[in-house]
Amino acid sequence: MSNKNDKKDNKEKDIDVAEEKVELAQFIADKSQKITKRTEALANGGLRIVRWLSDWFDRILFNPRHGKLVAFGVALLVYIAFNQTSVATPMESSKDKNGIPVSVVYNSEMYEISGVDETVDVTFIGNQGDISIMSLDNSDIKVELDLSGLTEGTQQVKYKVVGASNRVRTIIEPASANVTIRTKDAQKVSLGYDFINLEKLGSQYVLGTPELSSREISIKASRETLDQVAFVKALIDVQGQTKDFEVEAQIVAYNQQGEKLDQVDIIPKTVTAKVGISSPSKNVPIRLLFDGDFPEGKIISDFKLDTETIMIYAPQSVLDSIDEITVPIATSLLTGDTTKLQQTISLPTGVRTGSVTKVNIEVKLGEATSKVFEGVPVLFENNVNGLKATVKNKGDATTTLTVYGTKENLEGPNAKFKIDDVVAYIDLRDAVAGENQKAKLFVKSRSSNAVLFKIVSDKTEIIVDILK
Image (cartoon, rainbow, N blue to C red; front, top):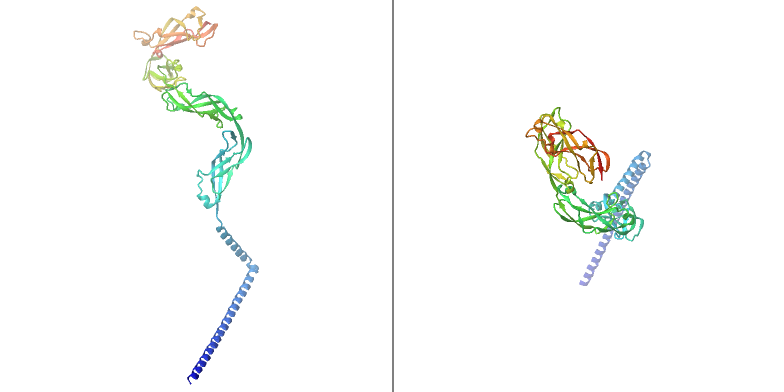
């Protein structure tokens, strides 16, 4: 009995499960149908929208009234597309550097070159970032002209930039050089010298003749350049020297125009120079020399100088020829019985400097009178050539002198004029042998008071015979 009931229960359970499956299948079928209908509705709606947009686009695009608007839209799209592409492309930039020195690679011992530019201009072009971080003052950036491997002759060679980034392009101006290469020759030459910086040597010093460690040196250059060499000199710097000194002097070659020839190799490049320094000097009196006529009836009665002597510095040969320094004064400056003035001292040729440059003078005028001196002998002076000179006429062996001055200076126990201080003479320094020659008669006073007097001779020329 129980077994039958169990079978009945199992059979009922199988029927329930089958029914549930049928219901589930029916549910899924219903859902699928709904989804299909909804999808078809959405597709039909989308298709209607596309058809509507297409009709609307056709009406605008192919309508002549909307042509300008369409063209503007197309141009706008192209512009936007172009700009987007440009933004994506890196910006290029450039920098210029002018006057970059050219470094030449060649065998300088064997060859002399010409035609190479001293400097060139370079433009650097590249990515803005590369250019902005590149320092044009960087010493690693150079311009080279590589002549290695080239021999004698004229050739066109390109410059190249060394030290720049591979990402940076360069434009060189000029791009190349027309280079002439010549083989060097050597020869020996005599060595001279020049003093330099003489303006920085004390004016009281005199330089002696230098002693050079070598008087002959070798020079090396192309034959064309060697033919231009006119002289080779050691340049002796005398700046600040005050006593005998020894210095290394650079040797330089010059052409006939005095231009330095840099392409000449000099062996050795320097020599040792020994130079003596001296300071020859001489103390001489200052003499006044009045130029012009004194006021009517007037003559100098007295004068005073705040400095009566001057120490002059010059080579000894110059000093030996100077006995006094004259200070000229125009008589037009004497405007009263007493005049005070200041005069600049002009030094003779060859004198380097003097202890004073100006002198203060006081001049007094007085009434002029005169005195005559007869029988003053005529002498011959400065007979440097050992000539024999005689006057042609015996009457010319003496002269008469008229001396103008104040009465106090010409006469009396305190008179400042002495005839023994006066010399009448003929100057034989430049005389030549010959007879019946007219010779000028000079009159001078050796007195320090000579300025107080005016001396006039009755003769200006004398006939003389001069024999060797």
